[in-house]
Image 1 (cartoon, one colour):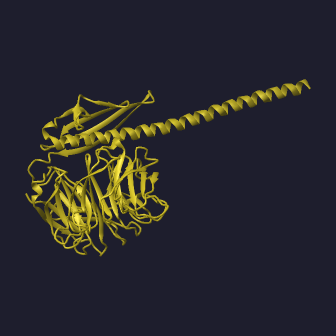
Image 2 (spheres, one colour):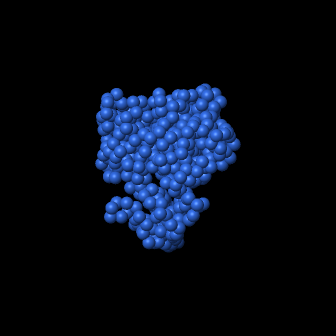
Image 3 (cartoon, helix red, strand yellow):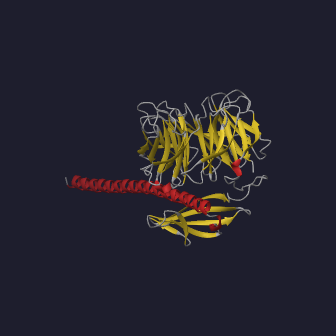
Length: 478
């Protein structure tokens, strides 16, 4: 009996030891998982602040090119609610941000926004974003490059070239960066085309890509790497790697629940905002995590009561809002709260009157521009200007009448480009220097409806439904 009691005691001690070791292992795993999640949250915050730093310098540049001086600065909001440089860094909630400005040629600066922080007081982290900002008030240089173009340059618009893409599929969407233009088309065998526009008068088709019979309704470029996001039907988000412009590949994809077609895409840091048609019980606003573009994952979604179309991220990313056009009568302009991207909400709306669906939205600081289908009531403009200084209380500021569908908008330097169904100006340029008094300053009569438009480096690119001229290359005439 003594031997058995001793054996039982040993077994109990061993069992207790195993239990304690297991508890320790489980606790370590739980703590480790929490640490990884916390690190991800902190990095997301840092990326938003880095992006905000870039937009702050862009705002300062827009007000005064003379303020752009090489060096390392901080940026803060002044008492007059405008961005300004401050010291050599600024601190927000324990994150230290520096903005480095370095000359890039004679009329541009390379801006690098870096945010650093101490993770949980021990491990440090750093993220950086960079861009090139030009002096958009300088005279236009027809030789190209990174010089900017003011509204005065766009007083006339000059058609430089058209591109005939093979087949008869409509061109629906467009994106542009540097000397590359990406054209998204309706279902066929080559829904994506890449065009080299190094020469504005002699653009060259580099390659095409089959996206498995999906309409390429929307395109958005990644802020890092050589990735392009394509939104359509079927597989709603497709990621294309164009590191080889002559042989692009599908790098990843994400199939969202429901059957809603994608209508709009916007990139904000490591998040992709996706807007979709209305289908009962399926979300119209979706947030996708693209920190790894090869493997996009669903973060969160919100449901509206009408289809959502074009979408734009706020120019002040740390505010945590996005704006979209809607087909819902009485709420044509919608504001999405994405402060918590895993649980976005529809925070506000604005009624423009009438029953016409909104099509696209672009932002410029605290101002948003929204376009719509042709409005039947006189005095109701197809382009609406909205003050979003307080995102949850958007206020109508001004409007412009076109008398036709305005399908897409793009923000340039002091101007807004518009693609429309107007019979006399499918492409037009809006002077946006005074948002309260916007005006159309030039336009071009294309052969068919302008479906979408993008601009970069003193050029505008318009895509249409034409069978012999799907892409137009346009430059300012002075």
